[in-house]
View 1 (cartoon, rainbow over the protein chains, first blue to last red):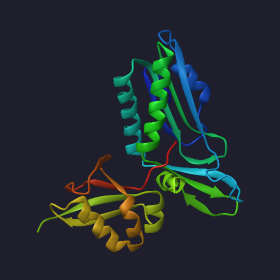
View 2 (view 1 turned 90 degrees about the vertical axis):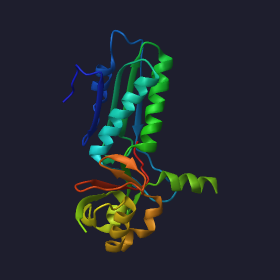
View 3 (view 1 turned 60 degrees about the vertical axis):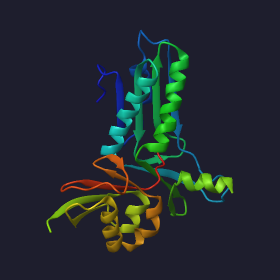
View 4 (view 1 turned 180 degrees about the vertical axis):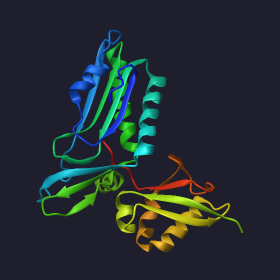
Length: 154
Length: 84
């Protein structure tokens, strides 16, 4: 259900994310622009010789929803925003499909860009959602961004 | 000593290792998150090596392991998140 009377549309959804309806929701006569970020699934270990087929997303949904609502509220305290949309998909997401969509409308582009960037960065660091790689050979692995950062540094 | 019940939720790799997503623990009144996690690791030894990298949420809010539990609380073990 899209509640169009609301200023924020925050949801965790089990199916393909409705990108067209996001633009519709974020558009507003008071907004001079919409900043839209679409996060898509990709292979985290390119060139590893194996074929990645999908990512499985799992959420601690009750907490994650509260966190997403809180992200929108925190963004609104930092920038004057018109509409905020944060949608995250859970379940199996095929490669190159949208796993997350953030849209922010504001009177001016600087605020829209800054808030959109801050929301996706903070979401990735804090929100209780996990992804697991599903490989063509049947193997799976939970993604651990902290371990990857450490590997990259060494 | 009076006892209380706490529901523990596990996710992602921790849940896979424990082999269950949810377990009810009975603990002495006044127990901390730390004590609950110790009891949990006693029951599911396979999760022990992951605990150094796990964060805790009590009723959907992040807390320190020194936080006190009360009857009916929901404690979640949060491995490193990877949303987005």
